[in-house]
Length: 537
Ligand code: 16G
Ligand code: ZN
Image (cartoon, rainbow, N blue to C red; front, side, top):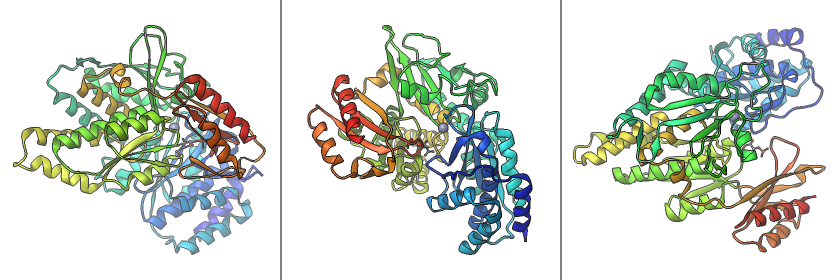
């Protein structure tokens, strides 16, 4: 059988080099690149098995996102472009950790468990970021795919959301778009330009909006790909690119990128100080984005994922009201969302909010429960998902001659906006185009956007304890179940401060516990975080 060959090949070409087990976590496997060769090979095998089981194209993305350049990682992408189904994460972990001599039997086991037909011809889309280790790791994935007679489709260096898009396109028989880089740029840029041309105002601006933005590419794939956009956007949006160092310079994510800016709340290296000019940073695989600016007093202002989420949700609500169509719209956040953003969106804008556990898959799964689900993590990862029935109703609204021109135009706008959005997963560049569209439409610059509400001061700290798993949580990680008594202690501390909130959770990506606190003032937030941190020891 095929898998016997696979097994023999593994022994020769991709022997297991690490003794310690690794785990397929919230973001797939992620570790030092030189420990990942055999893991990649085995993920190639698993991707073919998954593809045959689903009778669909599956994706494999090689990236370690915002991690330092020597790291790498791998994630599998499911048929609709979503993250690998949770029930298969265990299989991924097993596949990565069995000895070379057990590989054959584990393949047999999964084939039997799911009754996987081993005859289907399946395609596996493979993408990689700009890390110097990525080409050889991609080769290992391809060896795995070929070993089980799958067909690897190599997309080369692409952003994570581009790969998700390609997979969704292939499985929707191109209904979602053409599964090529050109197809992706064409879809997003055409819709973006349509939205701009419908405005009566000139390209350069509208009200306070100026069509110029400083862009931090994190010295990664987001820098490479933004040039493709700029070529196609022309004068409609002038993107000044910074942090576009070559591959292998060690500069990837170094003192720059979305994670650096969000965590350190300061300007990244490489971005010039220009007071009140709109800037953005993407991360190493361009699935996260944050906005920011420095004011005339050199004060740094961050507009993170919560800000982007509220901007988008508010605008969608506005359009739905203009069209006069009743679609249920909700915003999905995590416990890290600033309390002020939640209050603004629920109290002022009357958009319902749901809170879920950290990790994109949790947000995504909740968002699909609504006709229009906006989801964002505070760190800048997020997107909007529309039900097919919602899209159909919008199309009907455009055609409906009993509606006013204003209503039909608003429906057209929304349909165009949907095409700017990458619904499969958070996409930094797509999100940027959405934000730019909304700011332009409203005649806003970042200052107007920031004025919508005032963030509560907050503090995030890391605490190292012997075993972080003694801490377990419930209610979307907002309440501690164990160790017993900890939650009561947190409650007591929180009650001492104004507008305070605090929670602790074990990290899913590092061997630490994270403590989050927010309160009415910076001092209170800092003090609360420190005090809660003390209780965790
Ligand atoms: C992963 C998640 C990200 C989450 C982060 C939390 C995905 C693709 N990525 O990077 O969404 O914010 O983990 O990390 O799901 P933590 O558990 O260490 O706080
Ligand atoms: Zn990322």
